[in-house]
Image (cartoon, rainbow, N blue to C red; front, side, top):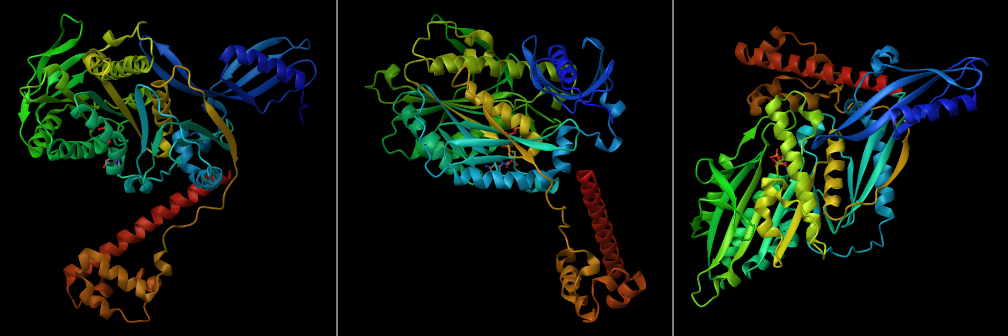
Length: 562
Ligand SMILES: Nc1ncnc2c1ncn2[C@@H]1O[C@H](COP(=O)(O)OP(=O)(O)OP(=O)(O)O)[C@@H](O)[C@H]1O
C-alpha cells in the first residue's frame, strides 16, 4: 500500500488550486514512495461563470490530476488525465443523468431535509417589502410526464418567504453523493399548490388598482422556458380584464398594443408582425412609431386582441421545451380617461404586461444554429440590462449611470418603469425538476440580483446515504390475482372486451394468462379472431413493457450500489 504523505498532498493541492482556479475541490489524495511521489487528486470544477463578450456560460469539468513531486516537495509534473481514460465505463454519466440514476437516494435525503425545514419554520419572520420593485417566486408543480421520466422535486418552499433548492451532486468518484441546499428569501414565495388566482390577488390587484387610479404598473414574468410564465400570464390576463371592465367607476378607454422584441428588433403583434421603429422623443424617452392601438370595448375584446398577439408571437422548437418563447412579449394596456374634465396627463394609467423570453443556458443550446446562439446572447444581455435598470429603481439616488439604453427592452420600459408613479413586480417562475436545478438556481439568483447587487449566498451541504433499493412500482403480471386479470381485460380499449371477461374462470391468474397463446384467446373471445388478436397483442405489449421497466430498475440499482 502506498504511504500517505500529508505534506506532499498539501503541496500538490496548493499548486492545483492556483492551476485550475479557486473553485477547485480536491479529494482522495494518494502519495507513493519517499523520493518521488505521484499524487492523484480527483477534482471537480464547480459550475463557474466565464464572461465571454457580453454573455456568459457555465462550465463543469471533471478530471483527475496527476501530480509528480520530488524529494524537496517540488512539483515536477502536473497533468490533467481526461475523465474517459480513468473512469469506469459505467460511471461515465453527466450530472443530470446521475441525479436520476441516484434519484432514490436523493429523494429520501430531500424528504428528511424537508421535514427538518418545515419543523424549523414555526416562528417565521415576515420580510419587509422592498422599495421600488417587488420580486415574487412561483414554483410550478411536477408534471405527470416529468414524473414518468424519473424526474423528482428538488425545490422546497418553506413558509411564505423562503425557497430552498436542493442541488443533488456527485463527488468526483461518482459514487458518493451530497446535496447542497441553497436558501433564498423573498417578500413572497408561492408554492406549487398556490393557484394563479391567489398569486393575482397578492401581486396583480394592487398594481391594477394603481394603474386604474392613473399610475404606471409593470408586471413581468421571468424564468426558464417551461417554468410557467405563460401559464401565470394567461390567468393574470383573465383577472385583469375582469377588474378593468367590472369597475362601475371606470371612466376610461382601454387601449391595447402588443409588441414582440426579438433580438434588438421590435415587431407589432397586432399588425402581422410588421417591424416597428423605436425612436426617442424630446425627453429622451423611447417610443414606438406607428404601433397599432386597439380601442377595446369589452373584457372579451381585450382577451381576443391579446390572444391574437400571442398567436403571432415567434416561437420555435428548442431542446428544452417543444414550444418555447424566443422573444420578449410586451402588452401595453393604456387606460385613457374619457372624462372631459380630467387633465389627461394626470389620469392616464398604463399597465405593461411582460412575458420575458426564457433564460436558456448555453449548455441547452448546443444543437442550435449560429443565429439561434446569437439570439440567446441577445436575450441574455437584455436580461442583464433589465436587472441593472430594475435595481436602480429601488435606489433613492438614480442620478448615477442606469444602462437603460443597453437593450431595446429597457429603452421601451424606461418611460413605464423610471417615473415617480411607477410600480413594478417581477414573478420569477421556477420548475421543480432535478434536471432544471441549474436553471432554477440561476433564476433565483437573477431575481435576487434585481433587488440587491451582492446578495448573500446561504447554502449548506448534506451527505447522501444509500437509501433502500428502488422497489418495483408495478405488480408483475405473474403476480396478478384473478381479479387483477379481469380488471386489466376490462381496461382495454375502453372496456370493449369486458364482455369476454366472464369467460376467464376464477382459477386463472396472472401467471397463467401471461402464457396464453393466440388459440386460447380465440377461445376466450368466443371465436372472434380480431378481438382475440387484439387482446393477445395487448398482453404481449404489457409483458414487454413490464420487462423493460424491470430491467431499467435493476440496472439503476446496480449502478447506485457500485
Ligand atoms: N402553476 C402551474 N400549475 C400547473 N401547471 C403549470 C403551472 N405552471 C406551468 N404549468 C404547466 O407547465 C407547462 C409549461 O408552462 P408554460 O408554457 O407556462 O412555460 P413558459 O415558462 O411560458 O415556457 P416558454 O418560455 O417556453 O413559453 C405547461 O404545460 C403548463 O400548463
